Structures are given as structure tokens and as C-alpha cells.
Image (cartoon, rainbow, N blue to C red; front, side, top):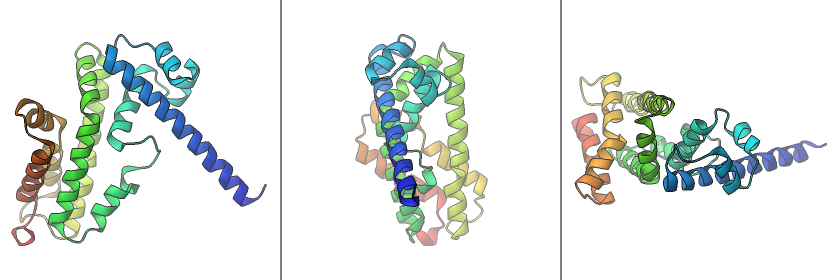
Length: 217
């Protein structure tokens, strides 16, 4: 078998696996939005996705909590590709942008898009976590990962000399983490009635104000 043929077969398999993950994620999301986490069964998800129950376990080891995590991850990313966040075009565009203020505008737009995609299912996870310790740990785990992930943009701003004087990377990370939380999005958009563009514009201005050195604003 030639190298080109092996590459083609490998890409075909990756594409098939991605399509299967997406079908499973879509079926899980639809059923859990309709019935809630607890009332949705693995058999129903498999039937809706058109796969065997065993395929659910092989695709997402860990059972129903792992499927909920898959939906969460797909909602944030916008697809089922196994591509690290740092390698995605949105993030690469932020890194490549030379203007720190524009970087944060792009970052705010990316975060707002994630909130919009994850919004309905986030409520399913939060409701399930009230009575399910496994789901509580899943949400706690995603928050820990969000905090860790917020260090990347903080370090990047520090490396290019854009952070406000006296602001450490740790404190910048903490503020990025807190400001880009689902809870803030939920309160502004659903409780206060802000539009999505209004929230994005506020997030952009607030990130600028707390993170950037005055000379970059």
C-alpha cells in the first residue's frame, strides 16, 4: 500500500469517526434537551443516532456522563473534530493579530459564540448536577479546565508586553476566567435581557479595561 493510499484511508477513517461522534452528540443533545439528563437512556440515544449501544461506549468510554461531556465539547467547538483549541482557526487568528485591543475583541467574539452554542445544554448539565454527583464533578472538571485554559491568553498578552502594569499572569488568568463565564452570559442575556451584540461589546470593553496597558487602548 502506497503512502498516499494509507493517508487517504486514515483520513477516511477519521472522517467516519467524526461523523459518528457528531451523530451521537446530536442525538444526545436532542434527547436530553427534551427529556432531561436523568430520563434519557443509552438505548434511546443509540437508537436515535442509528448506532449500537456498544458504539456509544467505544466512542465515549464512561457511559452517559461521557456523552453529556461530548455534547458540551461539541457545543463549545462547533464541530466534532478532534482538534485542539490552540490549533483551531479562531485561536490562531487571535494569536496572529498584532493589535492587543483587536485580539481581545476577537477573543470576546469567540467566547460569545461558544456561550450561544452551549447555552441550552448548559442548563441541562446544571439541573442534572443538583442531584447527580457524577455530573457535579463533570461541571467542576470543566471549570478547572476553563481556569487552566485562561492562562494561555494571559501568558500571550504578557509575552507581547500588553498587560497592564502590575498585573501578573495569574491575576490576568483569573479575570479572563471570571469574565468569560457562562453565569455572566446567562445573567446579562437571560435575566437582564441584553442582546448578544450588547453582551459581546461589553465583554470586549471590560477585557480591555482590566487587562491592557493604557498605551494599547
